[in-house]
Amino acid sequence: MHSNEIRNKNQVIILAGATGELGHQIAQHLLQRGATVRALVRRGSASSQINFLCKQGASILKVDYNDVSELTQACSGGACVVSALSGLQDVLIGVQTRLLQAAVEAGVPRFIPSDYSIDYTKLPPGLNRNLDLRRAFGERLDKAPIAATSILNGMFTDLLTGQAPLVQFGLNRIIYWGNPDQPLDFTTIQDTAAFTAAAALDPATPRYLRIAGQVATIRELQQAASEATGEPFGLLRVGGLGFLKTMITVTRTLFPQPTEVFPAWQGMQYLHNMLSGQPKLEPLDNDRYPAIRWTPVRDVLATRSTETKQARVNEFTDTYSG
Image (cartoon, rainbow, N blue to C red; front, side, top):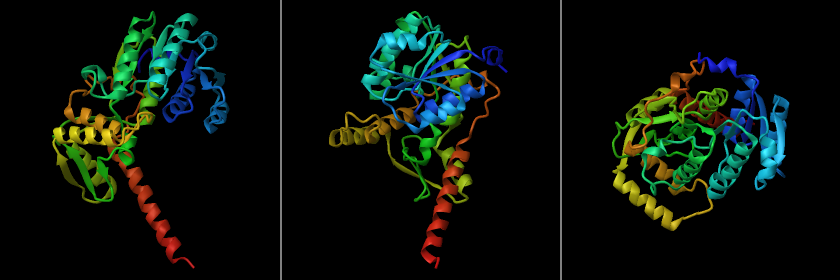
């Protein structure tokens, strides 16, 4: 076990974005590790997660994210500020910059930004809007007098059962573009949260920590889906990466959705980046906190398979009951 995992319990961790799914799970893992969690919540927020976090033992502090002096007071006494905020420029650059300024003014020694992505440091600017925002904030963070650590986790494995179109359960196909043997990084939200909590309590973290619950190719996704569902899955190659790039351009032109954090074309950009192999995470830091047990892709897909089968049973029962 990493020596800092136990030694740095009971520290005050300032958590922004605790009402989101990732932030909420980071809070729970911090509390499980014995940390004192001070969750910053936007004033006026009525999320059901707030009461749950209170019951779990977190301290809830409602703040105005536009007020640096108020944020500075909120950060006072913190050992690390962890951001799990989600948004576009106004949040990832605007709010996070004010939060960073507050952390520095309050004397907080460490800051973990809301990155949680593929390795954007290996990509040139202009290939991915959301990653460009992370890069821009990272440049500000590097100039600040505070120790910074970014957690890079590839794609959230959870997306394979919903938003990410790679696993087509209805067709029993894995659809892809480009090379089916390109290694891809996947980490569940739960595992990313567990690792982030451990890193927040570890004062010796480097600038970047790279993790992957499982590294899998398209062919290995095919095998995982087949094992998870008990049904054979095939591969469906839609085209090369050039064709996917054209699809992104067309989709963004027809459906720009500039105020959406994750419009369809943004997800396609992310897939294009991953399938290109450029932002592959290496070396991995999975062994830094040995107590964490990584969730394989198959287990996540099996959960979706079980839910689908139960839905079919319920539909059959509703149709023929009575």
